[in-house]
Length: 235
Image (cartoon, rainbow, N blue to C red; front, top):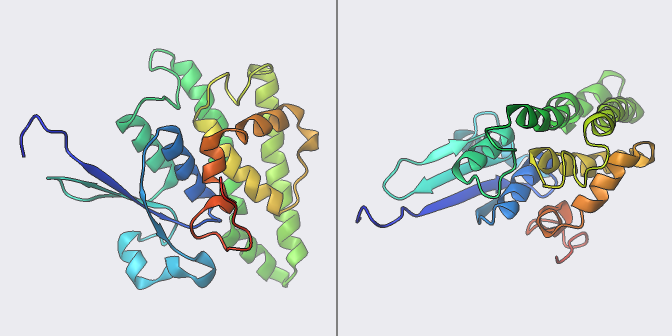
């Protein structure tokens, strides 16, 4: 291969239509005008727990990004936040973080994002919810637990918006950031648990504006190739 020719890279994304973590990556790909080859795993059938997939991702989690670049060894990333950071570093335009020259602004975006990815998501994912349900065998226990965790997290997010970005179009200003990328998939999960967003007007406004953007519409759970036909929409 001539050194003057750009190396061809192909992205393979292991995804599931209802995975909020996979949705984060779909949104980022859309925002950065990148394409990927989807590999659908049905989590309801425990595809992600198969021996074959564990060879791809030892954690048996979704998503996994496999990067194939001509002339280089295949590269796999198995955590959604690590994938987002990798895409930001390898494809910095359009940026999902403020400029390197503004470290405080970058920290603020990460702070918002980590409310979602660290405070809300880990204790409310389906595996944990099923464990809570299993203590007494009561579905309401799991729902109450998840709703409480989400409400606390979203209330903190609202306070951050009111304190630092009260008039912002999106989470951290007038440009979409990493915080927005992880926010909307968590909102979709929260709706499944009947979380009422009326208590958080600034957050509700951000959500409405983000969901009007094509990058978010195309990444939504109802618009995926593996979405059940009865639920699928065309964007």
